[in-house]
Length: 233
Image 1 (cartoon, rainbow, N blue to C red):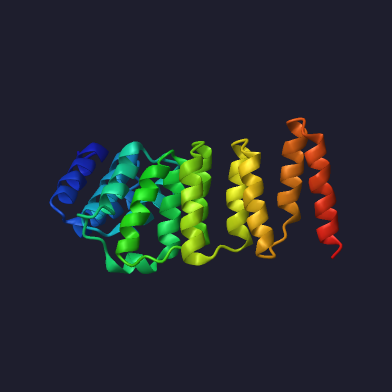
Image 2: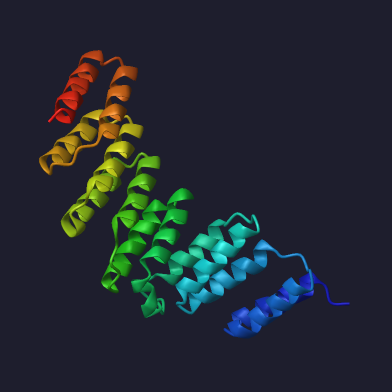
């Protein structure tokens, strides 16, 4: 009797041979026959599509894993990273799918692979990818979570040069710096934000709260007064 292991091995062989369409047909049969799905099989498809440069479809399998409550592994993300390498046969349509790339970056950054996502962005830029504020926000948050101030500010300056960030861009970098306890650097970006006539009470409130928690009551009061004065104009 054919069991789930046997089907999984057949899928493995077909993916290895690059016969992804046939492998998917077998997967559909397994699904409709109520065989138990596995993270192993999903990883096979992520790897297979990445190997073919079909990153968009690989990301769909990443979503499929999450739908089934399978946590992506290091191998899953390594497939995606290699798939976007300079040697990969990247599907040209991906450079137009900003939402798909952003989703991939979000997953990488959430799983501690921000540097890899940053390297991937460099590769995709050379291929014509057009990042938006969400692209940069994922990387800024990721570097912030890693307490990598140099990486965080580098990404923001990249955004500043290419996209001229709006208030959400400044919010991302200031919030991440606050979370890292770097209030002095955060206030430098506050000044740049004000110079572009961007006003955010939320940012002021965050800085006031953080200064208060660190015992800088005087600076907290100064920021509060500034916020009130700006708000009254």
